Length: 386
Image (tube, rainbow, N blue to C red):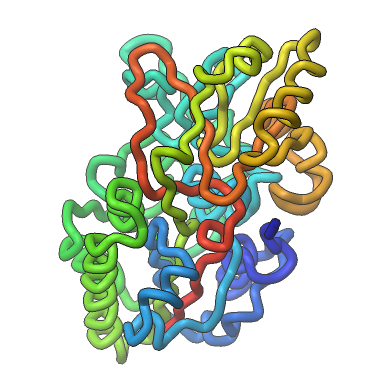
């Protein structure tokens, strides 16, 4: 099983290199895949995050593309390999070990509820906690780290889809950034160019594109639809690089994670395992590929025995605290909130299996492309620099 490499070429190491180019320090070492001197020379550092664009996809299906031509190496995502954890690492510059956003669905002891972390709303759906008419709750006390952009001491920009520009997450972690919304791929690149030309002083631009991931979830990362979309992105970035050639702009293109395709027969459902289900205090948390299990103290042996005897071919069983000690989530001292958010045990899916449950009112899992686990397809991400 592969693990994130937080010592060298990881999301946090990339962010450390960017921080050093602004004379800011990070607890993580900078990556050696990109020159800090190059970043210091740049007037515009543009970080383009293509959600779901894995290194395996790039090397297998991106041959001959502009992006592949400017590929400087592979990095690892964080654990789990999911947007909630990785985007928070981009936005804070540190690993889940510090920020404690350890998955999409998390049990927040502070709120007494199971929450979709980035939308900051109950798992079952409804109004985000910070947008309610009464008893509004802000996301900041739940975050274990400060904003990366806000600490740079320079002009910063967030290029983000219009429907999430005012989310609690974005308002908190990009509070000092100018926010440029978009509704289309053309609009995305128009806004990047607008930010670059906003003034001539040094700036940092964080630009996030979600549709590659969304199409991969729906159609599968190996689908023609996804390949066509990649080609559209590639063409746009080629044109952008040409247009900003004489503006002292460094374009950095990477991803939060990759994806792996699953199939209906590889989807395991908790309802088909009642003996396991009766061991749990609350529903499964985390991700369909990385489940955090909160187990009744009197059912610990039953839980372990069932997983080891019935599910051994599909998942690996870990005590969640052990994963912190083995640096799955990052290096250095862990955030005290982290242990509360990863349960007693963690199930990490093998091959392309997923393990999921269903709350009342929820639809059954129907995604083709999935992520969160530690396969090559999910863990390794490209670093492209122009």
